[in-house]
Amino acid sequence: MPDSKPGARELRLLRITTVPISLRLLITGQAKFMANHGMEVLLCSADGPEVELVRDYEKCPHVIVPFTRAITPLHDLRCLRQLVDLMRRFRPDIVHTHTPKAGLLGMLAARMARVPVRIHTVAGLPYMTTTGNRRRLLVAMERLTCLAATNVWPNSRSILNELTERKICSPDKLEMIGQGSTNGIDLAQFSPESLSDETLTAVKREMGYDPACRYLVVVGRLVRDKGIIEMLAAFRGLSGELPDLRLVLLGPLEEERAEETLPAETVEELTGNPAIVHIPWTDEVPAYLHLAHLLVHPSHREGFPNVLLQAGAMGCPIVCSRIPGNVDIVSDDVTGLLFPVGDVGALTEELRRALTRYSEVRLMADELLQEIRERYDRGVIHQTLLRRYRELAASEER
Image (cartoon, rainbow, N blue to C red; front, side, top):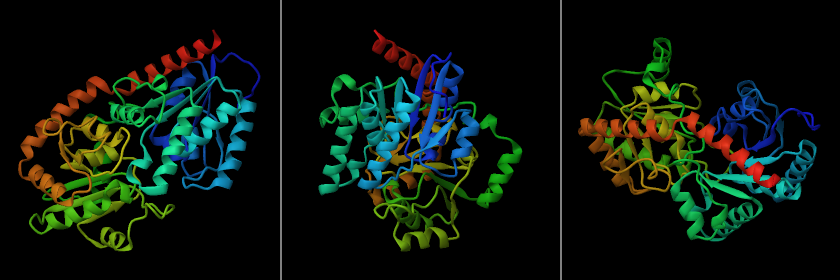
């Protein structure tokens, strides 16, 4: 951990996520950017295989607090104490949290440690897909997180409206950075021109690419809330009439939380169907999107989904669910096709339409590409974050 004695650094920033893969994927490059602009940055998450990758890429120190993504009250209290001790040693000017568990514990700890600027980014609301007591508990946790924060940054207009309308957060704390998104899109990385022949050859080999086939690609964890069950049902229905159709699933199977784990018969189908390719992890998402005919995103809930920005930047046509977050990026029949969430019949019909009238969705993809270039460049997002950090810290000093 960095030395806590005053030094030449302008501000001290502590960034916290529940798991290290969020540091790697959700806020890629932000820590490095802030450190290069004079801030002393410390990263924090649970342990995991991505920790060393994050340290190497961001060039910032990282400390481990053993968060769980599940609700584990006694363990969470121990993590809260560890966070308070960490903040009292590091003495950050700003604590900025992401993801629900890190947000709740991080904001509470920062308030207890009297950190002046406490920011939480809301990139999704888990309660939106739950009912009963669990929903009430998750809503209460969101309210408590917002109460402890000094600033709450929803990453889409839909989430900002939800937090306001349900009175989960005081309106004077809410602010959306730019046009939305947590981290924007790296237009140098997500560009057809960035792909080497070697990368494309390797990806084609991994997916068993056949130029005579048409490929649907789904990117994200394989869990119920990502609409995987509906996706497989729609693919099953289309495969009989479109034998050249293939489905590529990029993402790990959830094995930690029972409420998200896919049924055994679903796992058996996605692993046993020769027309379905499952790739648990890849660093070559741009290449897959370049080779895909459609990006399908049937998720039940989102904040501001990066995969739609990525597909849009690669010029890949999109079919996605009509939910908050998705609708902040994709306009139906203008920049992509939307269907009612959870509706297998509607998803099947939109996929059939996209595949049989492909020139139309290609034009929609071109329209989305222009919007993404104008609104979501990652460099602009990083500059905006740096400016807001400095403004908020300066206002606390006055």
